[in-house]
Length: 107
Image 1 (cartoon, rainbow, N blue to C red):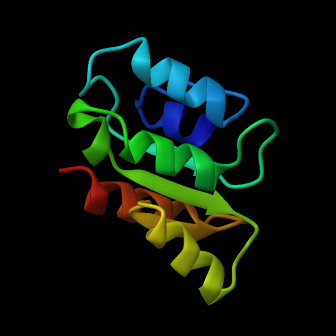
Image 2 (image 1 turned 45 degrees about the vertical axis):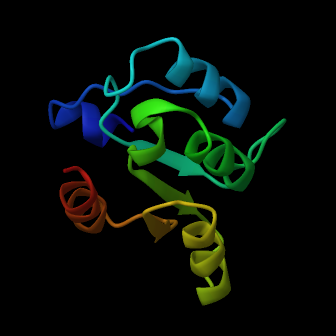
């Protein structure tokens, strides 16, 4: 994520989906502009975390979630979108595509 930080963005990392949800709940809705979500994580994967985030009350439902994963097939992209993610980027992530996607999903 250092490329994001080097570009002047503030980045906060969590080790898994459960910790991501805890971080969201620890701040008011609207605190985060977007979530870059890995799919394969311990304890709670990205699909489960995205579903739970979309079921939280308030503006958490609308925070953009971008899947960043080695799962690059179309069915992987479709699954990410079906659980409420806004975009899907296959690893290795192209930096220009990442920034373009962030610009697109952050309203």
